Length: 408
Image 1 (cartoon, one colour):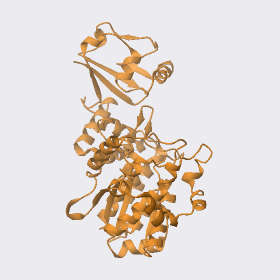
Image 2: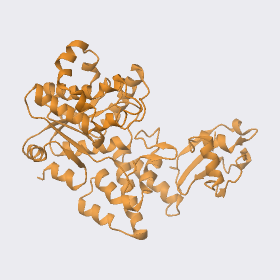
Image 3: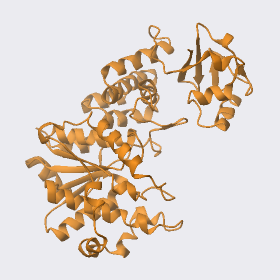
Image 4: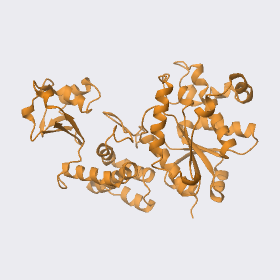
């Protein structure tokens, strides 16, 4: 059986490791308990989190034990990594609600039966810490000078870093120590932006427990141009079907750039690498076949095979490749709202096709909005009930985003 370290490396996951040779040897000879943390800053995971879920799936398939750490405690502080300003403070009630949403979603990807995976919330220990004892036991091991050289803090020094956020690295490091003591956790994994925080935990365990601990980061989900994936004109790509429909989710992957197809197939599916390379090498119109496979495989993992098939059928129908389908996303609006007509901007907002009215104006002025095949040129256009055909209106945004409006 192949070593999961080699699998992750071949597929392009691994970015940095604390002790590469030791980690590879460890993963090849025993079942390793490792963890990844998820701060519940929203009520759904997004595609960036999905990459972390895939990593845990690879590790679990190879016989290792994942700990999913829900950051109910760390979310009270907020990770300054990658942020130019302090995160908005959330109430404990919001954090708890988000944590429950995360638990439900992550349970779809991992097997939690018979202790094969563990899910914990760091609020269970962080919220009960006593300040002075914590400073004496843990704080003494952290050098402020060294912490200030960490990328997550350096990028914030000009605009100002609050003392609240400065504690984040120590709290995350303490999480690793706590999991090491309770569950024998030997390794922390995370996105490459978490490297400084992971190093803090590895160093803390080695100092306090005099035992080996390891860290490994994996690549962030970016395009070939280095931009973060998972954003569209209308917002983030979420794993919750209520926030991003399976059809829109499918379409996002169906429309990735040609240069990103092989990388996405490698990172976000379980297709064999020979097949990934074959699909990635297709050119011209042939690359669209690879994009269809990518979209289907990723949607199947997140939303199930039935929803993936529906999304595929809907996409093919809209592009004239298959039978008509009822699986295009839709919004139901009462007849009464069209009694005196509805402004196009209001309609686009109600269907969540635009994040703002100014974006709507820009799209219309650039010819980016069509209704039932006719381009909209008037930003003051009024939509009446008589414009609906059999109670349905089809709106198209850009070249590939379709949305139905249905009268009820």
